[in-house]
Image (tube, rainbow, N blue to C red; front, side, top):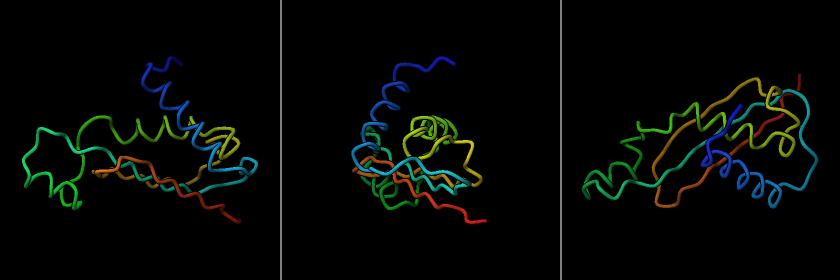
Length: 112
């Protein structure tokens, strides 16, 4: 499949950050993944709206869609954090606003 340039760049940057922070071999077996995506507040909003967004009262309902964030993030971590994203049996994903955009990823190995 074709990745737009922004998505391709995102996956490469994510991979580099993963290699820097995660030194172990890719995980195997079933996994539970929690993803929190924090995006910048748009500069065009009022101070009151900015406060509502930063407090979590108003959450992002703008593009990119949560499922697009999920797909590109999981694909970008294949072979690095886990062998393949088909190992993921449960996903929880959320979008927030923040003054410090970032992604928080928690992975739990499911011991069957």
